[in-house]
Amino acid sequence: MNKISANMAAPADPCCFVIFGASGDLTHRLLAPALYNLAAAGLLPNAFAIIGTARGEKSNDAFRNDLAQAFRQFAIRNVDEAIIAQLLSCASYVNGAADDPATYERLERELARVERACPTGGNRLFYLATPPTAFAPISRYLGQSGIGREENGAWRRLIIEKPFGTNLASAQALNRELLELLDEHQIYRIDHYLGKETVQNIMVLRFANGLFEPIWNRDHIDHVQITVAETLTVGRRGRLYDAIGALRDMVPNHLFQLLSLVAMEPPARFDAHAVRSEKAEALDALHVPSEAAALQESVRAQYVAARVGDNEVEDYRRTADVRSDSTTETYVALKLMIDNWRWAGVPFYLRTGKALKSRRTEVAIKFKQAPFAMFRDTPVDRLAQNFLVISIQPDECIGLQFNAKVPGPAIAIAGVGMTFKYGDYFEVAPSTGYETLIYDCMIGDAILFQRADGIEAGWRVVQPFLDAWHEAGPHGLALYKAGSDGPEEADQLLARDGRRWRSLA
Image 1 (cartoon, one colour):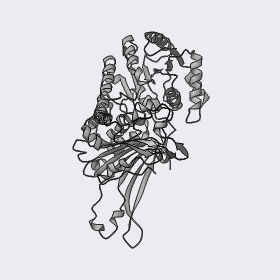
Image 2 (cartoon, helix red, strand yellow; image 1 turned 135 degrees about the vertical axis):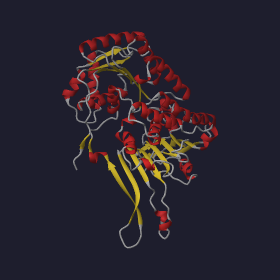
Image 3 (spheres, one colour; image 1 turned 45 degrees about the vertical axis):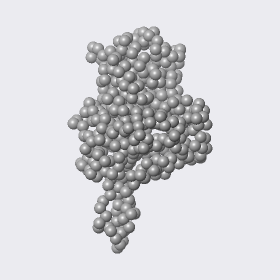
């Protein structure tokens, strides 16, 4: 089979890429390899510069050495030293704290120097690879100093990482602060899940094929399962994780982004405004439960000691920097309903957790069972369930499960499957998931980024669960063994509706 080349894009606009938090883990592990991969693919512009900024005192040469080490250490493909040299030649460093006005005076001088030497056209991309507490002060100083102001035809864009708030009130406050200083079209709220090819393919699968969209509704779909399962424990993130938990960490961003792509109405056109409007409408249509209903339609749990693969795992509460009486959940399962015509009566079941049996991210659409009348004399209870499974991790593929006749004179039916794997059809180089998102920001395509109204719509749904769990305290917190599929209570959540989770095995 001749594979199709995946690189058909033109280089991005000339620009200066400014990284706040340039000494951090995100920069080294993900941004540096992503920039290298973009350069290797010929997608960075010829006029391109990198300015790193962080608290520590550091020379330009020291910063370049840090970048070079990150390019080599965290590369996910063989590196070309010539490409590394090219990227380092345009890199410089500015030290300073995020809340110190002097930092921005130094940054402004460095930007002026770089833009005299490199024809970027004044285009600037600011990446906030920082803790969320720095989002507002950095945005404030970028706005007040004029560094982030668009003028003379040059664009200025800001990328911020999740979490976008810790509850509805904080998300609304963050959006207010950002939008007082920058226009919405300048703000790119990044979710690295949306950089994965299979996630982007959900829209293409639905809207570019006459096969699926006509049956993508309550008449044909029984329910939808969205799973983000991790084998990793909290590890050394005990203090940070214990203040957040699985619900805040995963649901308003990763899982709701997957849900919105599955549930959205067809956009009038394939552009950022139309697509993001439909995604926000889908989230806004989610039923906001009362606190009593939130307790009934959710499960929260913590892992306890057991084995995950070959590794012994201790109780979550014995993790360093985790409170011994912690009620923070490491697993969450939710049943959500969407109040619109397309999805009326179709439950969306979401689950995510740590220290589970296997690492898996998938969207599974369960179609309604066919009438059994013509097969009444056969063991219809053995009919396979009809699932369309969009697998995102660890394998990027799309599978369809259906029934077929077993060869032979008797009518015997067995479940079979067909699977499309990206690697079988396309020449796709390994990636971090950030390449597409950074490139899209450089060309001004915001389709894969979240808008303020979508962020707030998601938090409106999550808030009753947060409030109900806070009020309940330790009551109702379930336990599950590390290395399992999760708590029994999550199985019961679906069993009440006559359904069951897909196995993580």
